[in-house]
Length: 590
View (spheres, rainbow, N blue to C red):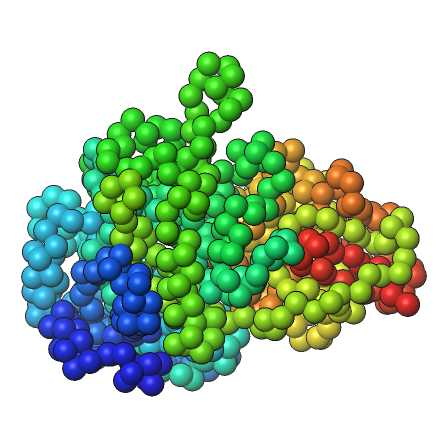
């Protein structure tokens, strides 16, 4: 990062940063990435520079974090986090003590001055640690960011702001963040937490505040669902409203995925599927409620002023035939009648060239009128993509009815051919009958199996009903990423809920970890042509779980099975994934 900073940042830029600092110390990776992205885009994507929206930010230095830890007696907890055998000790207690901690008066005065500057304009408090958004480690979604509606008298606004700061500080000691550091050999590195406080970009619509568009963009597309798509052209995940629905996995809704060289080439085969997989809910800041909330897009339409809704939506023809007017968020006219796609492609290319590797950005867009808009670059970090190539994949020379598994549907990840050592199976029928608390117990048990397999080694395919990594146990298996990080491929078996469709989740923090770990993610639709799962063959294999993890809870045992691939008949299982063809085959090769 330092060579980029020397190349693009001037002395005037550094003085501007110092003038906006609270406290002293380093400003962290997320802040540096945001500032660099803006300078690179303005310099190297000159055609787009006039459409870049300025930011309005303050920076809370990392020394404030250190001062806070020492002042509140938290340093011993931090010291424990440098050792592999103690890094999780006392983490819960440490987070509780952080949330009850206090700041020195001189820091509080600077916070008050900053809030006076923002007035009652919404802000977001974002993590910006030293290791975050850097080459080699992204920390995507491991630390918190907190919106503040910032309404009411100064005392109320200060209390809400302090709670946001403490929430971000506490996230440095979350189990997910600490496990990420351990997994990437970062426990001994000095991890300090700076903060980026940004004025939220957006427009006021009645009593709600949000940008017209927001999303994430990858300069390299790891999800190639058609031969027409050039992965080097990049991809974006687009939403109406706040970008939280683009970066946090949302289980009750969908977003628009756009391949930048073929923007109208959708993963969905027809308009009926497009309607089913369109965004329905919008994240907004409710200024009356003084909080972030989700609401139905249809309910917002009546309050929308000066927004080019026709660019974002298509009319539902079936509803028109029934005498109703219903708008679907497709963004088709935005993609074809404005320069937005070309602008995003140029910006992503400029950033990738400067970083000398693929990048991952977050952005928001606000329209001035029906054709003029401003792009606000909110974040930029290196995208850790392994194997950015698409090899020619062989077909397994076996009959379809002899394959253990055939999938023709959503495939996320690079094409590959790999020999399997283990199959971890969550029984869809039995899992579907479990109460929610036991489903969470199943997820924790999968974490125990994952850790045991990590010690043994080998390539693991996990099959389970619904969505892996969901926040809603009713929709799938609610594992965290650290509970599946030793698994090479995840299969969603769409068998748990009639209306459930596997979610691409492109651009989310969960997806970012899949990309970072080069994990394959695919869907299997047992009732659709071209899909097959040999359940009888899976049932015939010997379960290795009792030997590997003997202390599993009784309620979990009937649901989970672990099979050795070389003990299934016939032996010698290979997984072949062809991403452009959206096809996965598991069977005997040769």
